[in-house]
Length: 591
Image 1 (cartoon, rainbow, N blue to C red):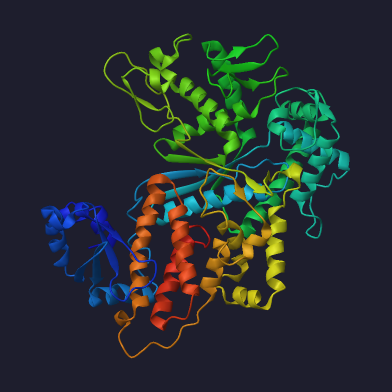
Image 2: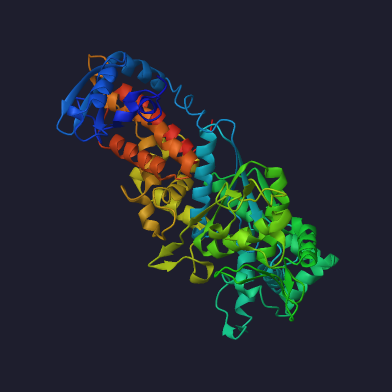
């Protein structure tokens, strides 16, 4: 038997069909697993009784005892001690997990920041989710590539460049003792935006609405700088490269403090030529339309954007076009890779519309003619098209068909809610706390408290403690709803997963083991069974991209461990489980 819970959930015999396995919330001297019948009147059901008898005679079962709410199963001492010994030695903790996603390729797209400012707490949730998902899939045996697309070609980039020029700072090098480079550019960017005054008939008070601002030409310094960059002007290119380099260098230092890394980073500017080709072919084929004012749009027939603007009247691209150019260019390389894009819920409309456009551009055959677009609507698609991935990919059936010339990526989107403070979304315009400031604040709070300093000193990776606390806070929450955030919560017991895990991994207060064998200790048995349970939660992360079961499992394990002293054998098992779980959620580097 490879795993206790696989036996009940995946087996082909009748035992899994009749009984579900559950674990107690705390150690129980009577049993290790509670068997819950799938048939209410199980005592009169021949199949349930037959399955129970089969379970009872398994070599790893010591006894099964009926109770009021099911059957209490006690595992054989020999099985407990064999599994426990391997865990105590620190081995086999992850050896039985690699088959869950073996052979599958994943591209996890997150970060996707603007090259205009430092990362703030609003970005932290995106980083936490993307980093954890990538770690979980890798632990499950998947071949995972962490990707990011940096926005360096939109209106906000021109604004940052104009702000840098206005600052008078022209040196290309950045001294180590100076203000952090991404903080400097962010201030220049915000100063320039605030100097604009009214824009399209309203006052501009923040730098977070760059997506809306870039849709309307202003013919100011920011717009002119972008045009000069596109024209190859040497001086403008120097400012562009310098501004971008300063921001990315600063953001990478932030990521390093969090322990987050990427395998491949792309820039929107890498795909200028592909964007131009897409517009030319789209206009030629009638899939795109140029309005009388010169704006190139895609008619989506969706409520989010009935018209999706791709090129402004002055010829500059929008973020819609730059995203489409990136995804359509990398699609052949990704092929059958499962690609997951992680972004905020404010991007739902954008993602829906550009996916519709990419599906349109990727089809060959009868579906692409103007005026015959019913195949884009799920409820109107001809029966010859089969939705494969929920994002419009299709395969031909019988009859008159349209096939995909290329795959459509991303294959999945994960939309997370905003991070809010006092019920207000945390954005740059609202004075959102920068991630650098938050990490420094955590370290300061630890430095100011004797007990917290001892925890950090005893942790296996003390230099990573602040980053683990910051990332871990967001992982137990449901992804879509907004998360209320106050820095003080990060260091409150029972409110912060990151702090609970840090304390548990730093606590090794084992008492002397008694004279009996390890299997005589209910806590030891409980810890070994918890190890088997981990695989169930990792499977959910692979199949549903849902990290909450893993995070809640780790929270429960950490809290139980912190409740009191355990024997030396228990302590060694639990530390192995904590380490494995931290790696599975990206809170600790993989071995």
